Length: 499
Ligand SMILES: Cc1cc2nc3c(=O)[nH]c(=O)nc-3n(C[C@H](O)[C@H](O)[C@H](O)COP(=O)(O)OP(=O)(O)OC[C@H]3O[C@@H](n4cnc5c(N)ncnc54)[C@H](O)[C@@H]3O)c2cc1C
Image (tube, rainbow, N blue to C red; front, side):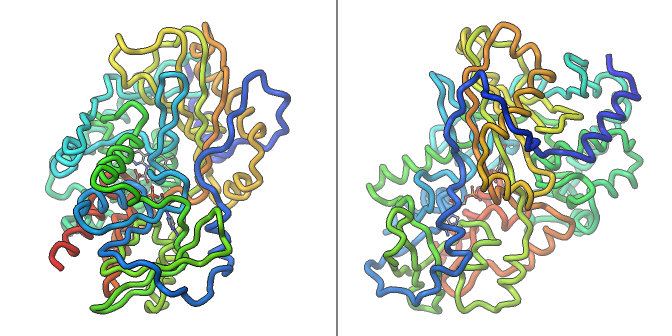
């Protein structure tokens, strides 16, 4: 049992230090270290550094629609317009963006985006069209560990009252027409007012005990890119609503959605997703053809170009602002100034009898990570392997710039060691009858937008159409989520279909 004092000390550590894996040199680990997955930095940094400011080459091909970026947003656009002459240019070797999966033995795990919240229309309809059935994650949805090994969930103990008050407030907001929803275009005036201050400030006004803020910091940092004091109350309330409702997942996380979309697109015609294709310039046109300059990351010396009746930019806004040509610089500055978080995800592969864990466990007071997802918890009990398992450990950086610098340096052992050491203390049961066989690390340099106060207003006011170039990244909703990606994609598709 954790004492109140221990809990508060734990929260102090959390607030001050979340969440930067320490830089200590690692001893030779007893487990294998997988190669990096996630972002490949080189092509994007070459564009950022101006290597590709050359005039566009002569177009070698003309298409109806070109989609720049093959994350959930870009793939949704492509899947919905699959009957058109359409091509997706994706800079990485595989589509999916931050929604990708890996596999160890027969277990699929998430490399980033893991679960969904909203299965109302049009989201569920889309998943069903893809042949996907989201599975509710069994109760208890998650638990929080507050510093000491095997401590009980403080939300069931000392914080029960505060946590119940928070849930009640969120339930009231959830049932109200003023709930801060996705899509943001449908937000009421009272909902928009929430965007003007931080989640921290809003909850204080609502007399929610500050003891909970450490827990909320972990939630916010993991899902929205910064602690509660730096997050828009609109985004925070939207996200936190999930604590009153079931969440849904697929084995392997949201990479399953991306893969199903990519398969649908390929089924309609091979070669429509071009990978390792880094777009460095987009020239909009009024009534004519947009021109898109790109290069093959494997052959970076050769500029390529295609033209399209419509270009849909499903890449993050901070980067889209750098590659859109001929647009009001005041607008592109607003885009390039949007702040992005940085993130490390560690998939820990265990051999031996798995512990019976809830889907998502929040690690209060941890310095190396915010939460841990059990990759097999989404499977029916009868389908769970009995001699191996995987834990997906989420380690967002408290200081995104410092995080990026460390990710770029790429010391895998230095990242894995403190995470594994802390995981042993937080979830000793995982190591009880099992051995950590391998740690697989994924790096996200600019993983998603930080949903700072004012973000919803900014995104509502930013134009999303420049002649025949449309912006359709999840950033457009101001909240990083699969639902945001789908909403933005559908908006772009509607414009294209209207012609
Ligand atoms: C670690 C992590 C966990 C998350 N967990 C969840 C979760 O559980 N649930 C949830 O709903 N959301 C989660 N998210 C949020 C996630 O942002 C969304 O779910 C969604 O996947 C975003 O999709 P997107 O298509 O808008 O963007 P992205 O996934 O960012 O896709 C953009 C694509 O554009 C490509 N690209 C960028 N620039 C160029 C260029 N110049 N040329 C060509 N291609 C380019 C990128 O390579 C990428 O494939 C998580 C994010 C991270 C990082």
